[in-house]
Length: 230
Picture 1 (cartoon, rainbow, N blue to C red):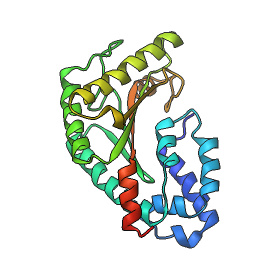
Picture 2: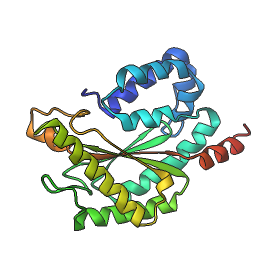
Picture 3: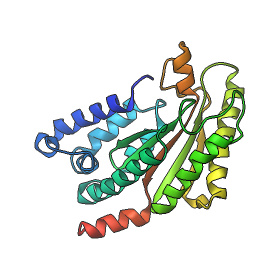
């Protein structure tokens, strides 16, 4: 599946428009989460099911955790702050604000990468993960999904194991830096969820990635609801 996050968000926005043009006409970045939850939740659920599928489970986790309404806008504001911090501290990371969460992708050109067929955390990746761990400590009311992915080169079983080892290596490193295991969930998909064209060198390089979904935890959700008077 080649649908990018930006293209998918366009689909989401269109679905919201069908439900309530007025509600989305002037929505800013932090308000989109509120619109998704407050207008047309059933439509969005269908769009997610049909268009995320196996192409981007990190995005699916973000959309699946939408709270919506004024509480969603409050969460979106907190996520704006955290996303900006990640962009500032780790310039190589691909950071996307989606709804009420953050999608972060590390590939071979960004702040966390692995040598060919390796899964150990090298010194350059360690520096980026140290900064990421500090940001997670600064924003403790979020949960993190960590996913490992590979390109289609090599046997499927080998790629599945490699993606598992890489995702687990990132999880273990963050845990050793003081991030609670309860905040993190680790998944791996080998070559089965490409975001780019595996027939090109550039596409394969981008598919060899570790992807994160950052979403509100129960504490932040309750805080947001209290703030919104819900």
